[in-house]
Image (tube, rainbow over all chains, first blue to last red; front, top):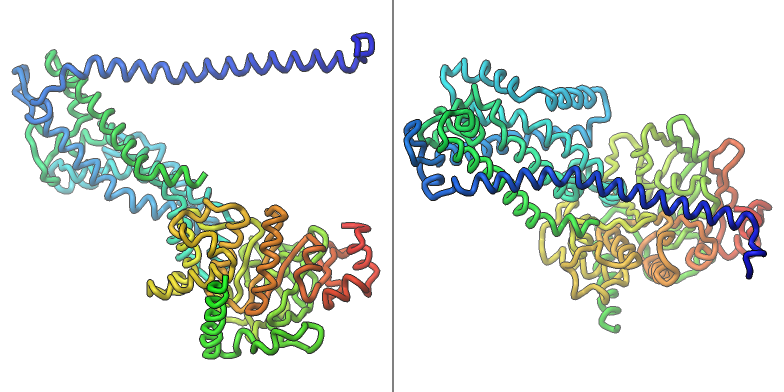
Amino acid sequence: MTTFDRSTAVVRSDRLYRRRKLLNQAVTGLMVLAVACAVVPLFLIVFYLVKQGVPGMSVHFFTQDPAAPGAPGGGVHNAIIGSAIMVGLGVVIGVPIAIGTGIFLAEFGQNRTGSIVRFTIEVMAGIPSITVGLFVYSIIVLRQHHFSGLAGSVSLAIILIPIVARITEEMLLLVPRSLREASYALGAPRWKTVLHIVLPTALPGIVTGIMLGLSRIAGEAAPLLFTSLGNEFYTSNVRSPMDSLPTRIYTYATGPYDSWHQQAWAMSLLLVAIILVISLAVRALFGSRVTVRQ
Amino acid sequence: MSDVQTGQEEEVARRERAASGRIGAPWASAVETSTPPEATPREVAISARDVSAWYGSKLAVSGITMDIAKHSVTALIGPSGCGKSTYIRCFNRMHEFAPNARVAGTIKVDGDDIYAPGVDPARVRQRIGMVFQKPNPFPTMSIAENVAAGLRFLGIRSKSEIADRVESSLKLAALWEEVKDDLKKPGIALSGGQQQRLCIARTIAVEPEVVLMDEPCSALDPVATLKIEDLMRGLAEHYTIVIVTHNMQQAARVSDQTAFLLMGDDGAGHLIEYRPTQEIFTNPLDKRTEDYITGRFG
């Protein structure tokens, strides 16, 4: 076949094809750029954190309580334990309520009550965390006449609930209708279907949601300022004021001493590292099931 | 092979013993199952009288009356949108899951009105199992757990009983030989055809009286389809089977009775003709049935 035979339509489609190819390349390039814009700052942050944080990570950083202001040495043992206790307790208080709410919204929430609850959850998610702290201050701290780790946990739980509830609802709604039907067709009542079929199927997604919530509350300083207050000394008593990594980072980073600044960097790195390790561990536990499902 | 057969015979005997305790045995004696469907009037498994079904205000099934014979395969054929699936979903009260769904008329299963006040739909579904268009094994469960799922819902805890029933159901579903060494593998790791047989095993594990199959082969390749069809013939010895199919050859191959449904001017499904399969395919009484089975439309 010679070019002589080629109809104008073929020539036109050739031109169209080149145009599409060019456009395809241009859009691919733009997407690569967008990914770079998102990923590069993230890597920079991590890089900077490691660079600034690692020098502060000594043994006494983990094992000792804070030294007197300005004095060398000391560590943040009390803040690490305090954060672990308050975040752990926050998850224990918040997750059952959140999952219950999510189940209600997904399975029984297609009505007026559901809309109201859904709206409330959305509003809750939008409340600034410092406001949550003030709220808990007024209902718990003022009544008990003292700051406490428990009050801190409650405010963290309040922040956790809307995050986990919404993700739980979404994950439950993602479970295919065909699985519910299969369960109903076997004669399972609704609650058994939810408990034995829908929840286990959505579990990897819900666990991811819990991780997301945990990461969020582990880094919160504002709701702890007027609830757990902070404590220069180690305590595991949740009825007494308790220290936490974010509040200690806040104190040290804004303080006048270089040793404080170094420890603030180290604490920031530690916080990121802990969240990363927990995420990876959970992924290792549930990851296989997520991939099997696809 | 002989081992499998013995297993199946034992299973049948066991199930008949179990069934004799129930009010109205779910299947009749072996003598009756061996007689051809058109020779003698059979016992009725499902008696549906003037059944209509709505989605909201839209009528989908218009006053269909049918008797489904016990221990036989009844096929529902007809073009898309003629209400076949909606109709059989009334038999196990699955229709009511659709928003604003409504059913009128009476449906009796072995004499019990399943829409009578106070009847628990979950109990109805334990007696009338269903296999769906797309295989839908539970993704978080192993092969064995999938088959046992219905038993767990019934509250059966005994491990040995569950293991026995899993084995016998998988044998009846002609899947045992392929999976007996992989019972702990996830159910969704199987091929599409195997998954559908797994769903059939799961359905028959709870020993329903009737198995409804809603286009069970439409997502499968021809080889898997033939396997399921063979299986249906075998299952019909112990169960009443109602199958909805788009595929007329399939209806001709597997069913004893065939019902032809068609969408009327009102947009709802009507029953046009319901007769023994051989007759409906060789000598249809209604012009519309003839047009459909000769491929003039649909």
